[in-house]
Image (cartoon, rainbow over all chains, first blue to last red; front, side, top):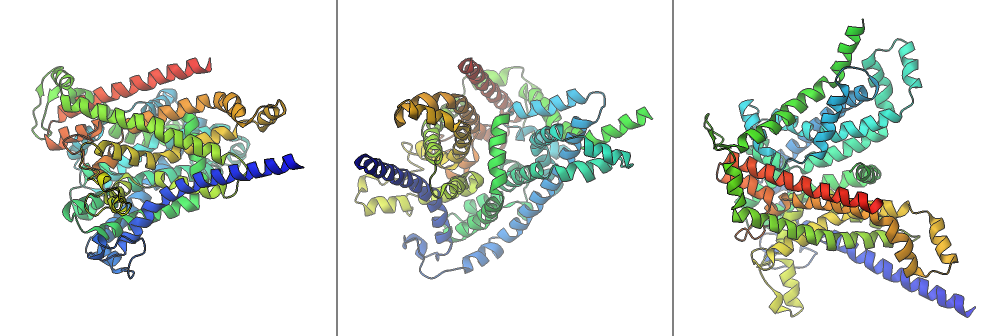
Length: 282
Length: 290
């Protein structure tokens, strides 16, 4: 009787320690973000004097100013536009290619697939240098189209790989049935393969959306004009111009971080899946 | 009929192959061609310099300092970040409350952009008005107060720690997934054999987690060596190159000094180094498995 009591106490103690550790790290994760939001609600005067997490008065007008005067409204819409365009592009293009690599026959298939996979393995740091030249030559620099095409290319290889792995394991019977019913190849891809691939497509969508929303370097070298910039680049240029206007900058950062946190909270199941799958790939 | 069908099949891969050819393969070959030339990126003519750019890299002190800096950040990430990631995963791999809550929270920093993370931390670490110095003063640790990001003594470590803050969630998720594949019966068997918690950890958990640890290390090295946006947002590479990293040098060669050829040569040099590192790691992991 006495020993079970001892073990119980010991177990409780271990649990308390574990929770203390986990809670400390969790607080460290969360606190900088709370500080960001808190700073975004202070006035320009308060921000250098009032160091409490709770601001005096909630100055939501900072958000209005950041959105209108800071120009972040425009950049926010750009970011949404680029993210949606790239993700839609990647979904269509990579799922068609992955389907062909998995199911259709044509000469050169293996070489082409191998090229996409090699691109995943070979790092070219500084690939933005030739891309800059290429886009200038094609008159696509400082255009939305140039940026969207570049970003589609960035996400292509991994998306093709994930989708092909799925199609390889998909049972062929449904496609056979559709073929007998007179469905064309494109029809089978669209009506049979794509709907079945929904769980993988979700992973592809989430990861590419995060990547485009958070992308910085290509946007930096492609865009000169502010009205075309996505949020990440606009934030840096705002910070360069108005070094001390922290409340507006923090409002801008919150506007940038909030959508991604929401998407993450809604889709975290797919993110966990993607990370663990991606880890197996790597 | 057969011909038409094959043609139809090509239609499926045509968009992907076209985009890939234009935006990956062409730039890929250009990098090698530019690297052998001196070119400002504007003039229609390039001057062929052979391996001149590479020779210059060999004696480019700032370049190798940037490599050392990246190596330092990587070392911090390999030890501190991965140790924290593993401990957290180990703590979460049991029947405890709020497990999901922790898991969700730990992956918030990785989903944020490097710009957001960098600028928020820059504000916290600000020398004059930053929260960290305010707290240190409040606790009476006046001697510790400093300009964290512009003091050459602390800038690189500060950047490295923020990098770990942003990145440990990846390792955590992969370690946790790895731990969850360990069959519970093994723990049960160890307990029946009279092993205590430490012995179980040392003789069951650790050996089974080595392949996962190798994988996480490879990902950490490749990811950290190439990290640079966080540094742009926090210090811009300063003070005086103390936080400069290779990709930032490439960007500076291109935009700062308009030396496209040199930038490409730096890119190739760095790419080869990265491939060598992952090759060594790969061999090492194969040996570990055998």
